[in-house]
Image 1 (tube, one colour):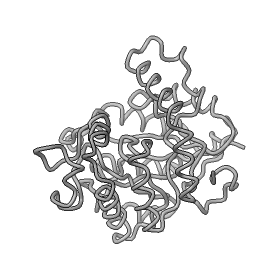
Image 2 (tube, one colour):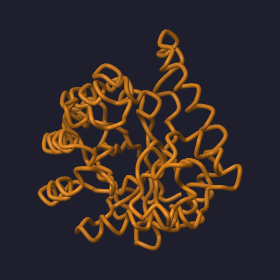
Image 3 (cartoon, one colour):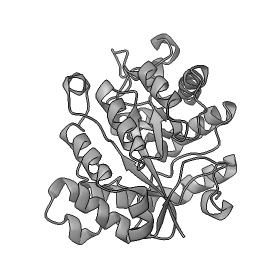
Image 4 (tube, one colour):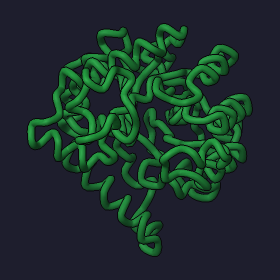
Length: 299
């Protein structure tokens, strides 16, 4: 059996991102979204979620390339020196961790604040992931698991790419995509086993992995159909970023601009019925209590 969660990231980022996620869900292809507690259009996203009861809404925890929810003086170790913003890149975060600057208790406190904001707004938080997949690293994952547990959240994205859905022959002529493929392959080899141990020890549910992580920013209909065709048996998550490349997005610091409309166009060309009929894939939500076999979700 093949099961697929189609999760749209960055819910709450802009009006255009919110509108695109809602349209993709209403067309029956997006089954989950992760909401940014610090997003400029958070309130609008909450209102939309209330109108879409079949959409699983998780927390897109922001601990890199953004601003904290807590006062800066309470999370100073998480912020780039001389600023009130998180470090801009994962590399900067890992260097701060290596030098002992990054404090796990401050990270846990910030994550708790983000979970709490969603729940206070009436969101039944189904799962969590982290902006830029920061939770693939143990020093980030452990505090986030503690924060999620404190808020009754028991499911987390497995951010490691399904092997074989994007092949070396697919990327050899695209330099940026080749680099992403190298990075995601190396990270899977280095981190997956330890990541699974931490998730198992915390009693969390997860999937078998992701589709679309290496191809982020380049996903069109042809790539999406190829990944669906190659998707292994099990329960997987398609990571996507639908959105409108409008004036609201122009004001946000993000590398994903035109590609958000590509993502949306690709998604809107495929229906849940087609997933089943053409690819033998069942579209499912992202919930620990969803009707998926425990062997597929619980490690």
